Amino acid sequence: MKRVSVMVSFCLIAFAAIFTLSGKADNVPKDENLVALFADLHITAEANPVHQRAGLSQCIQDVLACNPRPANVLLYGDISFNHGATNDYRQLRELIKPLEDAGIRWTACFGNHDRREAFFNVFPDRKSEAPLVPARLVILIKTPNADFIMLDSCLEGPVNGGIDDAQRAWLQKTLAEYKKPVFVGAHHPIRETGVADLMVSNAACAGYIYGHNHTWKQESTNGVATLCLPSTGHWGDIGYVLVKMTTEGAVFTLYQRDYYTPRPAAKPEDVKPEWKQRVQKNNGNEWHVTFKR
Ligand SMILES: [Zn+2]
Image (cartoon, helix red, strand yellow):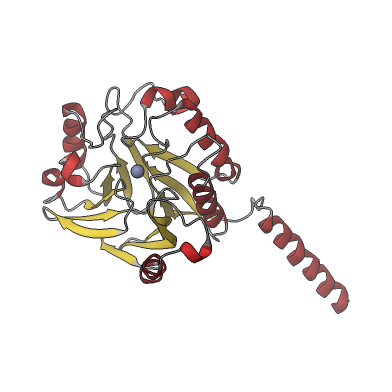
């Protein structure tokens, strides 16, 4: 009798392991207090380069290997390789499918390399009939302990970013009424979106999150705590960030697996020692935020 139950448990474990390895373990729980942050994907559908696609896929596999898994993945812009080609977004649709298959929600904001029309051609369901701000993709993601506002800082041409008056007015009004902790963010740094003055004396504002510079970096800008995210695979710090939230605060952990610029080394012996050192120094770093109440 005992031997039979041991056999049964062994089979169940083996069965679970096979499903986990195949990425189809729909029984892995999702945690609404966990959010994964991706930035600067720079996906291309061209045959070369391949490392941006490989980098994103690795980040997605890492998220799927979490137990529990984050309920949300937020993409902080520069999804497209360079000029918002429709095929880049079609490629994203393919690459991100494992997240969708696992029931993980993903949400994107635009960077300077994105184009609204091409994105919405590929993802028409993501164009709201009642947008928070007209003609801009402004997003509010709710989680149990803190929310995330993703602004639309794409100017469809220049490298720098900014937000229009309507977006600023919406943010001002929204933050004025906010009681719950909220992270404001965009693809571009806070100096370019110019929202520090709306955040600095607001107790609900927990920090500002952005991409664009492909560098894990924490600063205080005009009194606002800011975090710059790594790139999933283009150049610079390579990896993603996992946020764990409680009623007290949030811990952002960096999962960095590589560093290269302007592109990965062609051969292992071409990897510069300072690249390896940077990964060793950065990987596992944390950014701690305490919620004010
Ligand atoms: Zn970028």
